[in-house]
Length: 225
Length: 179
Image (cartoon, rainbow over all chains, first blue to last red; front, top):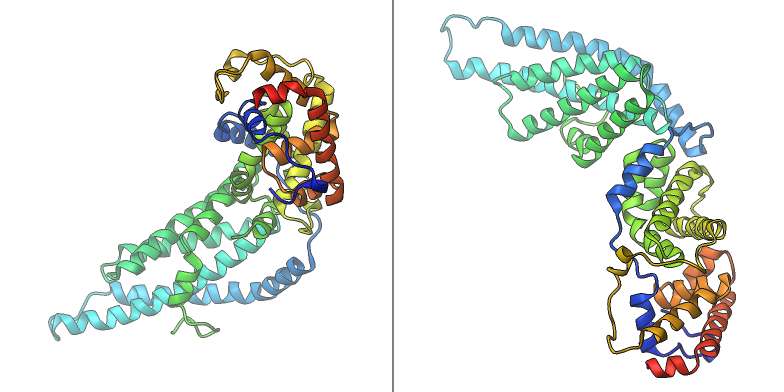
């Protein structure tokens, strides 16, 4: 408590203490029950006015969007080639096994970095859209494609780095949630928003974007292809 | 993530961010509304209404004051209006369940002295009682009270002074008897 008013002493400390303990003394806060009641009544928020900062961020991401889509399309081709090369039968014992695995690992590394770069672009756009209170249904197809590739990489015996496997596992979860969001968006807006919040929460809690950025070199040549 | 960032996310419809704001503030809000209302049912209603209004009016929060201060000003307004409407604060009856929560500070004190002390707080005018509860019973500073009630700090101090003076005047010997 801060300074006393106008030199007036508090009423007797014992009386104050008695009142503190007895006068409408609050019980333990029923946090969960109240939250359940509040959550049931929370209406979806519609954001109609953007701050200048939001608007600028929105323009920045919007101007990159066509590039993002083009990069995604190109990368699908590159990844397809990479996977095709990985899954092609090895020449018959013309070289030791170790040397046959090494080039595949290099190809897969490049494909993985490329894949992470495209996933980062998707997640950034989805997050920006979510902050603006909207979901772009077109993201669903993109997320589905990335999800399939994430699973291919997870299933690949060349993905041996535990940190990379963890990252891909987290990506798989977030991508599944984004796909779900786009699936229910036109049907149940409340559920879509909840799913989106869960996806964003997972993204934040598990530091997915910083971990991707630690792997993917910055700049347009990120794919390393 | 700080409060401002959470508010920005909540403005975009992020209920997870809003839940974090709820978790950080609900205890103080519930305690205050309970002190003011004196009943669990009313305190729950006022607390829930406070957070629902905050959610609906997030766009009005500009960050000039702390989010918790803004939330408290909603809580006090909701509670005062609710108490006036219910008109229960002067003739409230404590349920046995609520009484079970009350800690016995001095078993030897005569029940009627305690009742007189509590009745005297009930009888304080609303503006004095609110400041007294916030400052002396819940430990808010005059700065916090002033921001919450939208008055000057000096006004908060003056109201507390008058609240205490009235309590002394109305209790007199009962306070001495207790002390």
